[in-house]
Amino acid sequence: MQNSTLETLRALAQRDEDRAAAQLSAALRQLERVQQIAHQLQSFGTEYRMAALSPGGGAGGAGFSTDALAFGQRLHGTASEQQARVREQEQRCEAARQTLAQARHRADGLQRLWQKAQQVERLAEARRAERRIDELVASRWGRRVGTERAVM
Image 1: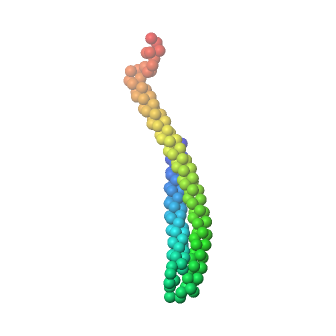
Image 2: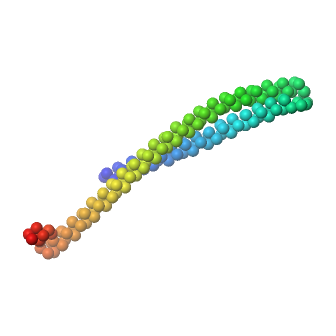
């Protein structure tokens, strides 16, 4: 009875660990996406600012340079906002890592407890088998095992 309960708890803990690992994986993928967006925004902003500052700033001349510089500045502002999202996602990843560590710790503890219960059950079964053999031998010899030693 205890082994089946422990087996159930161990399976649930393993499922929780798997779920936590999947959540961490999803959080890491999302972190990669928000970092990539931040990098792209920063890169595009730099390109627009460089285009605005380069000589012969395009077909529109001064108007293009002003627009490109303003757009580059807006992209850098958006990139800064994206950095806040990156930090938030990093915090989610850290929380998911901690959840996974706790789930692993719980699953490992239940695994050890289950293994110990299995070992105790095997030992108890071996003792029962030994007692059955002793009783069989005693019934064949007509006396109880241990009586001879106790008399001597």
